[in-house]
Every structure is written in C-alpha cells, then in structure tokens.
Length: 314
Image 1 (cartoon, rainbow, N blue to C red):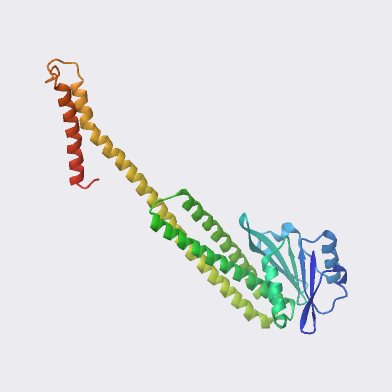
Image 2: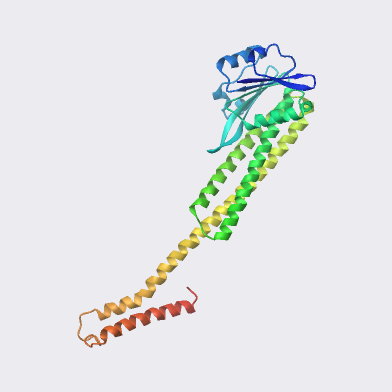
C-alpha cells in the first residue's frame, strides 16, 4: 500500500493510486506500508530515490542507521508497538529528498495514523516533508512517554500490593520482570532515535530553520531516558523487596521447623530412655511407669516452649 500526500492550496490531500505519483504537484509525503516490489520500484523510478533492503534497514551499524547521498538524507529507526502479545519493535525507514519525505515500513502503525489525524486538524502546520518527519517523531515520543507513565502506574500498584499483602507471590515477580523488559525496550528505541536524530542534526541537507525543532525533540528523548532510568531503579527496588519477602518467608518456615525439632528432642530422649530394655531403670516395671514417662515428655515440651516464649524467640 502506498499513500501519497500533496499540498493543494492550504489543504493537504491524499492519493492512494500510485499511478498518479508522477502527475501530483507539490508532493510532501509518500508513505509505503508493506509495498509490493512493483510499487517500490515505481516510487524509486518516479522520484529518483533508492530504498534500502529490509536487511539493511535493521542493521545496527551507524553507517546503516543514518547516511547522506545525492542531497538525500537516509535514516532508519525502531518504533515501538503494542498488541495482545505485548510490546515489540518494528523498523521504519525515512528518506528526505528535496524536502519530500518517503517512509518505508512493514505493517500498520498507530503513530502514522495519529500523525495523519493531526495533519487533518491543522494542515497549515505541514508545509514540507520535513514537518511530517518531525511530527512523526514527536508523535512516537509522546506515545513512548505515555507507555512510561503507564509502567510507572503499574510499578506504584505493585508497590502498594506488596505493602498491603506483605506476601511474595510468583505473579508479582512475573509482572516485575515483564515491566523491566518493556522499560528496556523503551530505552533501546529511545537511544536509537537519539543517535539517528543527532546525525540528522549535523546534516547539511536538513533545513537550518527546522534544526531548533529537532533539538527540542532530542531534549524530549533525553527526558525519556532519565525517566526510564528512574523506572529501572524503582523496579530494582521492588525486586529486592520481593526477594526480601521471600527470604522472610523462608526464615519463618525454617524457624518453625527448628522450634518443632527442639521441642520434640526432650520427649524423644525420655521415650528412648524408658524404651530401653533394662530392669534397673526406675519405674519401668511399675504399673504407673508408662504414665510417668508421658507426663515427663509433656512437661519437657512445655518447659522448652516456656523458655522460647520468655526469650521471645517465638
């Protein structure tokens, strides 16, 4: 699918027929979403650009994430999306050629849909493809900030649950681990955007009057990175708290077994003595000897319990 956006007066209009690409005037943005090989080749021929292969787009080397050639800026960045299986990343390729933006991606994206909505609300904001590029990045960063705020709320809720229940549960550890993974993905994508935008900021082909806007976006990314660091610290604290509760539970279990073992040691000793087959053991042949041994065992257990209580060990 290829979406073509062009200016007509103050309005920005959209064309979905790729065959109109060569006829459209005042072109500002061409969005390729999971295009066919024919559509991709058509755009390349009509607009005198060249898209990278999917393998090149996902490369992590700096030379693959950002480069310039023939007065064209090429930048690749990872965006974050969420579905029923959780968060995942997907690559987006930006090409800025003669102030016309070309985007290449696989699959649908809420970031692009939200940008189109903003364009419909205030079309005067979008004069060239540079404005679309900046708005796409701003929209993505806003979504990342919302995700971090949601994670922060989840962390606060887990903290309250631990304080209220005062009991470690396996589900809590799974939630903490999932939040750590999500925060890590947010941090990775933010660092990726920071690296790419820093390269664009140094580009001689990027308009000078838009670089201040780009600097503001970079400051927003820096704020996100600080926020992710804060969330990491909170999650680490919660994890330590969780492990502390587990240690307390284990200590309580060990303590109970230790007390029970010590309580039954004197009765066991008495039972062992009275169970010996020796005639000189006192009261072994008397009719009340059995009851005496039981009484001694009970008394010995009670004495141990009284001693533990007095020492406040139980």
